[in-house]
Image 1: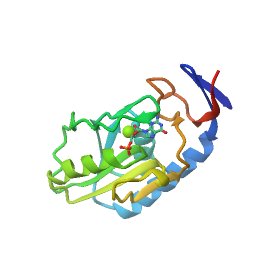
Image 2: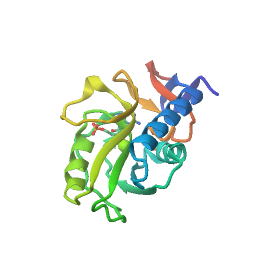
Image 3: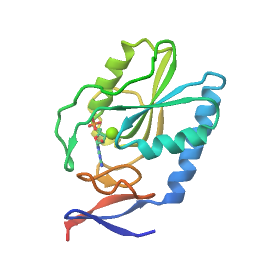
Length: 183
Ligand code: 5GP
Ligand code: MG
């Protein structure tokens, strides 16, 4: 595993190693398996960042479930643009279903607040959030994240699905922007 990676003009250093991520995702899967026993929940991955986490979480859950994806893009570069687009691509009927929104990372919480509002209107039986990462210091909106992989400091990260302007999603580990960022 590389300890330093580059995406475009920026340098990132190893922050969460593959083994740590995998064992934490397995723990979350086991927790969800207990909570949702016999309920065939719907894992609703938020593209693009959560594709890897959603796949691994569903495997870790390992019981009957559905997996579906939606899209709601909001980020450009390493700073939130503040704009949140509306939900697209939902193909599963969520009415009376137990739904787990699967997010890569919760920052201000704005994306999820908007998403929760939209999804509640579809009248699921229950609606919870599983996020691989959360930056608690950055939270501005009162959302509850029931399942959090890791609480992290407010630095920009890539890898395990997360990108910097399109690059870096393929890494099995998570990398943090180096203090002295540029090459
Ligand atoms: P929020 O709406 O909570 O402010 O932002 C959430 C979204 O911003 C995440 O789903 C993710 O796409 C993006 N984001 C926030 N922090 C980071 C980060 O450190 N790295 C990357 N790659 N994306 C981030
Ligand atoms: Mg996201």
